[in-house]
Amino acid sequence: MSGPRTPLPARPRGVALIVALLVVALAVILLAALLDRGELALARARNVLRGEQAQAYAGGLEAYAAQVLLRTRSEGARVDHHGSAWNTPMPAQPVPGGFISGRLRDLNGCFNLNNLMPGRPDLAAWQRVFRRLALVRGADPALTEALTDWLGGGAGNDEGAYLAQPVPYRPARRAFAHASELRLVRGVGSDTYARLAPYVCALPAGTRLNVNTAGVPLLMALADTVTQSVAERAWSSGQAHWSDVTAFQTFLQGAGVALEPSTLRLLAVDSRYFLARGQVLLDDLPFVFTSLIEYREGAGIRVLARSRGADDAWELPLAAPLPDDLARR
Image (tube, rainbow, N blue to C red; front, side, top):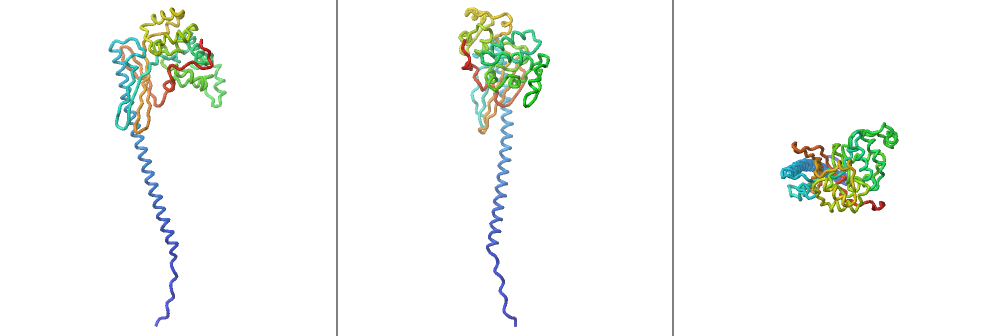
């Protein structure tokens, strides 16, 4: 006959409960991490898809811009102005997931920085125009020489100023690929760049200035005697429509302004270079694309450059007023 049994010790029920809670918490954390990783992967896939979709729409907008230019020329238009068909913005069009819109800007209506390239026969004339433009916009006219040296002029005497910068670099000694490179030139700060950006661009050297689409500061830069009042009358609130340079010259002569022959040779009423800007909005994600388009008589359309993102010249008004600290002439 067996003796009395010894009672077993009670199990620590509190420890078991804590372990169970830890297991549940760990499972919840792992599940949340998996869901978060899945949402992140989904967001990445969506962004890639929308980016590719926006790129495709941008290609379509670029083709549309080219067709507008070709149609304008096929209809016999030989004078470009802000009333031309190419200047009509394409209103926002609904597409799956958002909207697209686009418009063109005439780049022959701005100052081509590459016309300051050393060795050009019209260099002196363009330098005079840029000096006056800098003065009108409240910038230092001496910037003209710094630009010419940056493009390859001088004997390298300016390299010390660039090498002495906190982040040293050397002058490019080549043509500008984009007007934003102007920020790198000695003497150009953020304020100076903001004043000049709406009126300058980077195109192949040798372009002429379209007096129909040039802004008031550029028209004032043609001669010291072109006052703001005369330039505003010539600009006609952006509706200038000079049939040829002779008509523009006749107007200036009536206002008491005589342009130098070397300056007259810089002017035109037609344009070859345009900037196409496409805006795409997909799932509330904005995309901006720009294309530099060249129209060549007899050769059609050629795209010279493409970029993605906002362009400084589009962010500032084409008819920006004169700086407050500059006395109006």
